[in-house]
Amino acid sequence: MHVWASVPEKLAQFGHRLRGVLIENRPALRVICDHDTPSTLFYVDPPYVHDTRKMGSACYRHEMSDDDHRELLEVLLAVEGMVVLSGYPHPLYDAMLARWERVETSATMAAGRGAGIRTEVLWISPRASRTDLFRTVA
Image 1: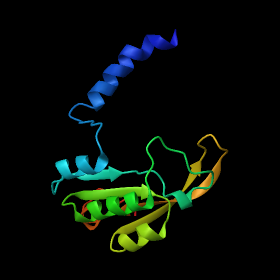
Image 2: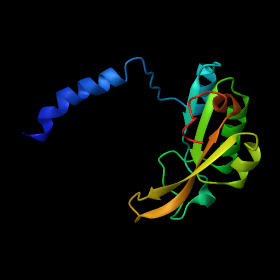
Image 3: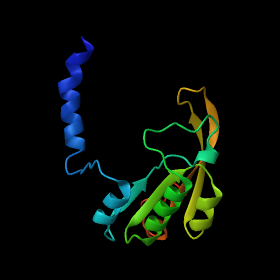
Image 4: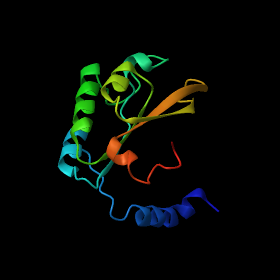
C-alpha cells in the first residue's frame, strides 16, 4: 500500500480529535489574556532561556529574550486559569514561580545535535495543583 493511501483516514482521525479545539496564530500573551477564565488550562512551552541551552542560541523560529521570559511569567502569575509550564531549570523561573509546584523529569534531547539527557521541569500553578489533573505526575 502506498504511504499516501492512509492519509484521508488519518486526517479524519485528526479532525475528530481536534473537534472543538481552537488553534490561533497570534502572539501568545494576547491569546492567554483573551482566553483566560478560571476553567482554562494553559499548557505553555516557550523557547528555552538562552543560558540553559547546550548547543548555540538560535534554535527557534521565534526567540525570547530574558525580558520576554520575565513578561511571560508575569502574565502567567496573573491569570485566573490554570497553568502548566515546561522548560529547563532556571533561576528566573524558580524565583518567580516559587509558590508553584515544581516537578522534575529526565528527558532525552536529540534535536539534530546528538542525544543527551537533560532535566526538564514542569511548573504547575496553585490552581492547577488543586485539581486531580496531575495527581499521577507529582
